[in-house]
Amino acid sequence: MFFPEKIKSIKPNDLVLEVGPGSTPYQRSNEFLELDFDSDSKKISQRGGVLKDPSFGSRKVHHYSGGLFPFDDDTFDYVICSHVIEHVSDPQLFIAELLRVSGGRGYIEYPLATYEYLYNFDVHLQLVKYDFTNNTLKYLPKVETSLSELSPISDFLRKSLELGWSDLCVANKIVFFEGFEFYKEFLVEKAKNLDDVLPESFLIKRKSFLRRGISYLLDRANL
Image (cartoon, rainbow, N blue to C red; front, side, top):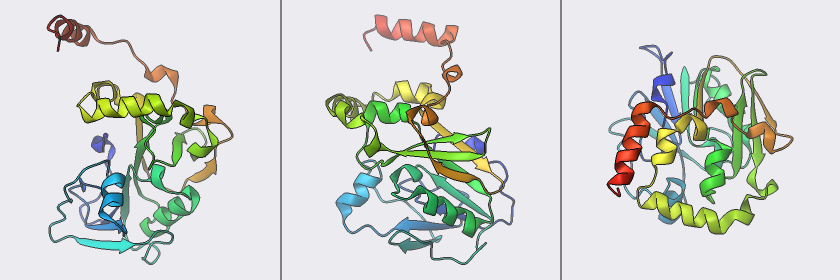
């Protein structure tokens, strides 16, 4: 999760469900919904290559095979879903289930198309972007784009991630990731084209004087 500071409206007595906690479950989550992986290799792949299992402590973990969530309507007061929506094959059903069990309150986060352009992870099936003006989450299946043509470049850049070269995305996370807290139901629709899921250009800002200075020193030191 890149924007935990955006989670602001959880009340002290709220029962919080986290869907797809990966390797780093959120500290305020009370219960978890985890996909029932059929192999360790698939589980590791879906978690971004992290080998270590998450620590849930005494908190309850529910496993399911996808599709409908195993909960009644409004079982929870708030739902957290970080870096999961891009993995699902049916975003409309998935979001409908998030809203159904949570009473329409929660937080969702995902990588943007810019991140997929660089790394194009096979387990990510969707490009996702929230249209704040129209209260609509838009998605575009990656198979309907030409990202696969860039696979040699993506493979090369994924290697750079493995070696710790994540500075670009971490330092400019608003260009590569998006998250928002919701308080009511929102629409979900398939995007008409790639333009619908691109981040806004105004998010790209000039480096600060301090960052430019640090970059210069690191370059001079060959780091």
